[in-house]
Amino acid sequence: MDLNQICRGLAFLFLPLLLTLSCARTGALPSPSQDTQSEAKSLSVYASDWNDLFHRQSGWFGGDGIFGIPLDGKEFVPAGAQTRTLFVFSDSVIGETKGGKVKKGDFKMIHNLVAFLEGPEPEEEKFEFYWPEDETGAPVSLFEPQTPNTQPGEYYWLGDGFVNVDADRTLYIFAYRVRDVPTGAFFEFEQTGVSLIAIPPGSEPPFREQRQLDTPLFVPLPDGSAKVTFGSGIFVNTASAGAPAPDGYIYVYGVAGLGLSLYVARTRPASFEDFGSWEFWDGQGWTADSSQIKPITNSVSHELSLSPLPDGRYILAHQRYGMLPEVAVQVAKSPVGPFFPMKDIWRCPEVNEDLDYFVYNAKAYPHLSAPGELLVSYNVNSFDFFVDILNDAQLCRPRFIRLKF
Picture 1 (cartoon, rainbow, N blue to C red):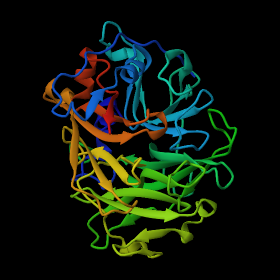
Picture 2 (picture 1 turned 180 degrees about the vertical axis):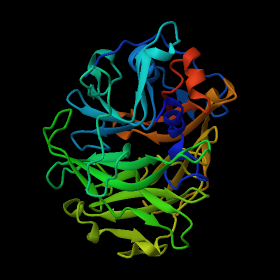
Picture 3 (picture 1 turned 90 degrees about the horizontal axis):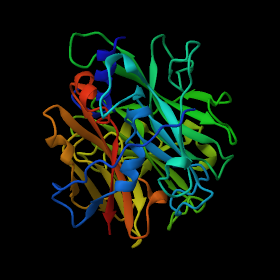
């Protein structure tokens, strides 16, 4: 697989016409210019401190698929000095840049890696990336498919994760098996399954104690038109997570179809690996029959988040229809809806910088958010990635905003 094929994979999770989805320290660069184009400045502001943290000139300097997992399991409790957050990334570029540019031979792309942040603030000295290296010292992906159903040539892009505090404190991360399929089309790959990576408490990279499970959570729609990829977002509705109205369930969201519809399944913490115990929302209630699933909303993105609001409602954060320029939210009175109409909270100015730039996969980080705010990220990329990155080395990185309540 050459670099052009890998580049094409960066948008794999985000185009519904194609698929149904979807240790090194580095120095920070000066602050990027702040947005002046947003049509929703009254609701959201540019989070310059978080953007500074991810605007980097060496080591990791770009990547997509970011999720932030509090390793104490306190998803909805403000992070403190002892909080450690695991960030998981999918396709990422590693190397050396200079003056905002990079040469062709000075970076490598790998399919996934992680980073750790100590404490609640985006402080450079408390932030560290990790990826393995091969015998030559070149970066390699942290997680490689090892399940019984894995086929040669498959690799992982990562979904959401959480720490199962109410069971045995296992860290779970959803992982999507992907393979290259040469078709001559722009995107030459397909998803083959949904796996679950289970990491015991106390493990550190490279997570040699991990277990990998095949799951039945790559679910065909009733009409056969697509498959739901569960793991797009996780809502831990438990008292230990700090949920304000806990019912004791773990809600796992998935996306599928041309309309980018959102589906939801749930299970108890003690039964998370017992897939036969999972229930699926059928539009009226919960059923063990996944073939009866019904969507709870649509026009979302393949990565997203559901978070509780101070008034007892819930807020779904996502990119409008996968890759449109707007970060959007929807409010509901329950984790399954019904959802109020979509509201745009930010128009991503990066799409105006280059004809090929696109944005995708907005989501929130409740435990890293200040009272009265919600920290939200979205990703930026280019359809002509391996040309554009040479002159805009930091284009492919998450951007952060603060939604004001």
